Length: 281
Image (cartoon, rainbow, N blue to C red; front, top):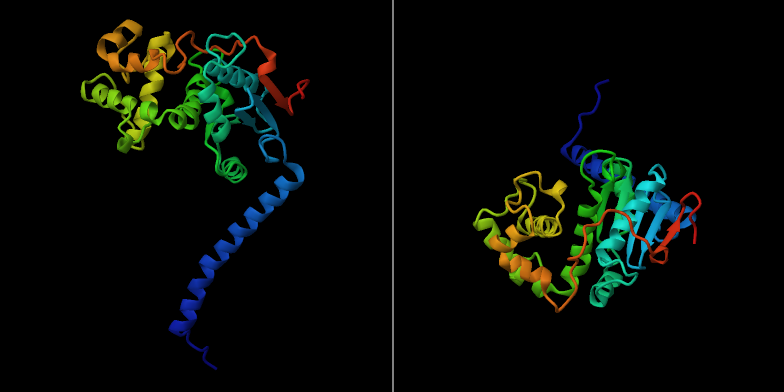
């Protein structure tokens, strides 16, 4: 007896089952993540896949997977403290920035190397609604080469803090036409800044520019080894982009202008830790 032919309706039903099945798998995966975090999670990172944490001045959180070494996490936390208390007197420099960060609750997510798929999904679910930036332990205070912690921590403080606090000064959005955006446009058009990454739009370039300009202002030679910023020190930056230096030196707020973060912050009261060997609240 001949097998009945599949009708167009049957084929349509089979095709519909594919996305339905995928959605079911994704939905069950999200439920499993939520249940696992509800049972084994908690703490400042609210996820079982991020059991290590450092909270800096109660506004910036560094979260890490269990296989990140404690030294790297502590270093990243100290860098965050130095960005917030750049004169290292034990008190954050700008109360308005701290209020903006308390509202935005930014997070630095640390993994041993690059942020892979599963920790990334878990982080997105656990930290939904919060600004976060990834940082690899392998690029944090390495025995040789550039320390990536100052850049990644600076990015998250700018995005969740300075831009929220003073959008007319620091916004990366072209529609806001902030002082920083205008300074970047002049730098880009004048050949001072170049960032050859097709995935990075103008808003992304503004964030990269303010970091590199800060590196030039504070003398971080390791961050100026490429030709992305064609000003290698404070005076050259002042000469080529006085508008950028004016943003940094304004007395209307306290942007970090004292010292480049090196991970050596002397005030233990700035931190609370979870899940680290020998370091607990």
